[in-house]
Length: 323
Image 1: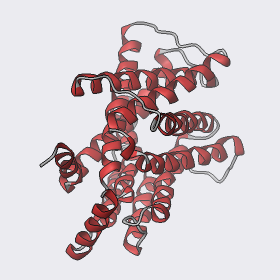
Image 2 (image 1 turned 90 degrees about the horizontal axis):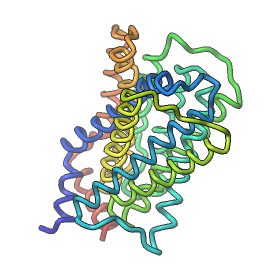
Image 3 (image 1 turned 60 degrees about the horizontal axis):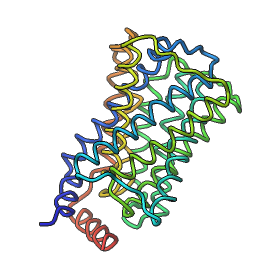
């Protein structure tokens, strides 16, 4: 068995997909309360948008460097771009990391955390819809649609107390653009997965997007004030979580139908809320939170469950696309 076959076998095994996807969403969920802690440690004010760009830019730039260093150690040669893959990978970074988080930070700054969580979860729906049109082995079915609706209901439920009917184009409107950027980035990431190994793709796309945010932050007069070891340690942790989560996620997208991977993104806001209770001492451990978590799990099960015949035919389609 070749190394590529071993890699595919590992990243398509259902138990491994479940475990790795939960690891990724748990890490991304921890970034939510860590961002709030970081704003205090780096003395970034609520209205300091360019300071937030600097924070995100440093985080993703360092994450890209760490990913490339890992690839250098693991493969015993430094990951390099080629004429064939440089434009798609760097373009992915500017779109998936740079533009997505640019719009995300602007939107979040002008709306509530509750609406941000719910609107961000819409990216999973959009990703599943896009996958239907671009990948033959990833069609939308009634079962998959029901899974998305049930999972989304879980995200809405856990945020139910803070909803209102207001809508602002510079808040919710821009956040919806960020959600589309996320879904398109997932699509592009899977489309270009064959151009290079996931470590190289992840490293350079994070670095490109991070540098874009740093440049924007500098142009707007943003600063990142290191106040000691806690601030440096937090930035290092957030860089590591991005490097690990994005790399694993790229491997999962490469070897599995996009819809069955992106559905796990419903876990991210759930973990974000639960970890906020632990890190920020917010009171969220109640019946509503537990029901929301169950709904997300049921939604994921609905999307991923398939009979033996369907699983065999889907694997055959995926094999033909790979070959």
